[in-house]
Length: 299
Ligand SMILES: NC(=O)CCC(=O)C(=O)O
Image 1 (cartoon, rainbow, N blue to C red):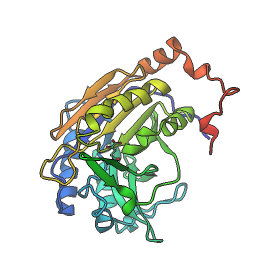
Image 2: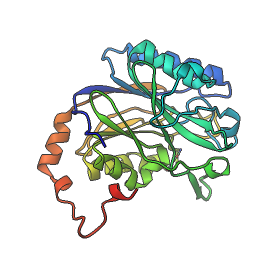
Image 3: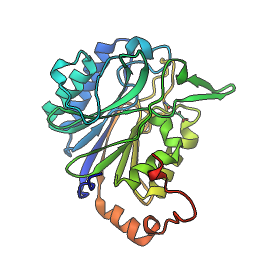
C-alpha cells in the first residue's frame, strides 16, 4: 500500500439536501445546483459530500426502481463518457465544473449479475470516478412501535473496505449503518486515513440517541476526523431522516453540525488537531497486538 498523502489543511463541505422526491431528474438537478452553491461558498471547499441515497427516496422498495449501472472496477480505467448512468454523468460534470473533490453521496447500483448495492462514488476535480464503496452492513432493524427497516429485502451488502487519496489527505469511506461497526473505521485509520466520511441517513428514533455518539466514538478511538452527511428531514417522505450533518475532530470534539433543514456545512480540517491528539494521547503507538489481533490485517 502506498503511503498516505501528507495531511494538509482543507475545507470540507457537507451538502444536506432536501427535496429528494420521486422525480429522479429533479433530484439530480437540485443536487447539481447545491454542489455549485457549495463550491461558490464564502470559503472554497476542496472536498464536498452529499448524503446517502441522494437521487431517490430512501426505502427498500425504491432501490431496484432507481438503480443504475456504474460498472466501476477498482484499479481499472473508467470512462465516464461511456456510462449510461445519469447520476455518474451529473456528478462527474459537477466535480469537473467546480474543480472540487466530490464524494457523491450514494445511489442504488445494479450490477450485471442483477445485484443491487447502496453505493458511494468519489470524483476527482477532473471529473474522474476514482473510488466506490458499497455499503457493507445493511440497515436491518426492528424497534417495535418506532422503526422497522430492512435494506436486505432488495440490497446486497458490499464486501470491501475503501478509501481514496487526494493531494491533502487519505479519506476512508463507509455508509451510514457501517458506522455502528468500529472495524471499518479502525481499518481505515490503520491504513493511514486521517479523515473518514460516511454519507448517511439516520432517522428520528436512532438519530437523537446515536448519530453524534457513534461519530465521536469513531473519531476518538481512531484519532481521526470523522463526518457524516445526512439528508434534510422531510416529514412528507416515507423515511424521516435525522439531518444534523456533522463533523468531529480527532479529540472527538464536534466542529460543525447542521440542524435538520436543507443547508450546507463548511468545516476547516486542521491537521494540527490530528497531530496533537496523537502526540498527547498516543494510543496509535500503544496498541497491544500481542494481546489481540490487528483488525487492519483481518483481510
Ligand atoms: N441508512 C441507514 O443505514 C440508517 C442507519 C440508522 O439509522 C442507524 O440507526 O444505524
